[in-house]
Image (tube, rainbow, N blue to C red; front, side):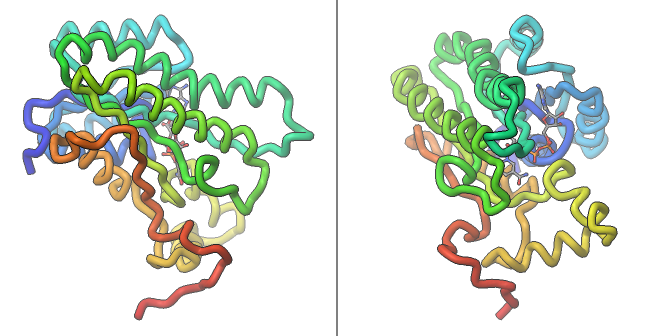
Length: 268
Ligand SMILES: NC(=O)c1ccc[n+]([C@@H]2O[C@H](COP(=O)([O-])OP(=O)(O)OC[C@H]3O[C@@H](n4cnc5c(N)ncnc54)[C@H](O)[C@@H]3O)[C@@H](O)[C@H]2O)c1
């Protein structure tokens, strides 16, 4: 359980959902985790980790604010001397059809999902280059680089997540000789408060039951958990993946393998 002993990991968008799950997994494996988020709720998420014996700290950090990102990273470098692992997780996924899309909608999507990753990485990278060590893990999505969404209204989100893939391969090549690995994760349907917490409520049904039923459309019979994504991040954050760079890992229970919907599935 000590695969990340003495490592310092900074996670963005860590207050809830996938970022919180990633933080829990990294802390369980011995890392000191710096949880950051635009939401003050990040404090409570970090406290849950320390209450269970993990090492965690929290900072309010809006990844659209370059000054704030630089300040937080400087403070972390000051107190810990390094950031070994950067998990660029924060992202938003509102839907809007292109013909109904105001330009501000598109700009906000890119400011958070794409430029936020540029800002955080640029703040951390010089110290990684100096130490000839670093693991950068970017949260893309299957939506965009691999598939369209059946729900539609995803041109902005899909483009932003394709850009995250482009950023990953471009940077991987740029920093390979510095001992820095840059990889991405492409999650499918993952249970998080934003993604599915309100699904049942919106339909006037129990959220857990609605989630379980939706999961039967996925070949592995369930939606992913934030920890499923966290375990893939753990692999990319550990030295077991030291010869991998510029790759993506799809974490989706086999969902995109279906060319057409074949479910609902049943356990065999
Ligand atoms: N949940 C899924 O099914 C799924 C699938 C594929 C990809 N993803 C990606 O995974 C990431 C996390 O998704 P999630 O479902 O956990 O979402 P979520 O909304 O549950 O959590 C996202 C977190 O990011 C924070 N955040 C938003 N704007 C921010 C900003 N400007 N600065 C700092 N933090 C900010 C939010 O406060 C929130 O805590 C996103 O990049 C998303 O696109 C999610």
